[in-house]
Length: 293
Image (cartoon, rainbow, N blue to C red):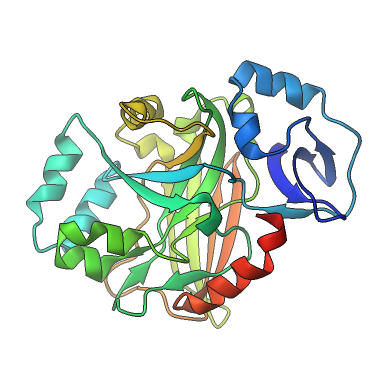
């Protein structure tokens, strides 16, 4: 299994490469944004021409430059049910689930994204915070699907449930967006709508929540979500679009500081995130990674 990655080499320089097993070979581009300015056909040529193996690399989030993370909501029946459970206005989510136009919202700028083994955060003003495991699409500037990632769309259920207009505060804050460092090339995934997805929450080493689903349950085609995102919009360095979740902890199963969230998507990869309270610990991690941003 191979993955596209963004990494810092032994000299601290940030590069993009192809990781196959333990072997990491650099591509002839300076950034992920530069890679995604190319069409997928050209990206495949760059992958085929990858250079000599690089030792001692540190993997980084697979976003840089002007890249953004966006997300789709209410794309699975379980998500629609969960959003109605928490909301004071249940019908708004049922209408979105049935509508032709999807719910799409901005999630994160590239610099705010965390990756494997880096912390996600609970909002300090929220009583119920949950992880949301999702299949993410890595998209070129032209809107082609270049690869797939694991995304955790961390959310405040209590804030969004109080009023749907509070969605940006529930979804967009420091420590609310984790993306796997490894990107599975799209041409290596025959059917993205037949992938098994699993998530579990560990607390003091014990499993306190586990859930499974399949992307076969996704109500909307990934290409249709991309088409709506690209309408009257520009992504000059590409983007990540998270496609929604169907594994949602109950209202009594929210995260606590010290928990660990583990997500796995078959044929794509995994994502592991320790949980902290508030943004200070996340900021510390981001500051320590500044040389590789």
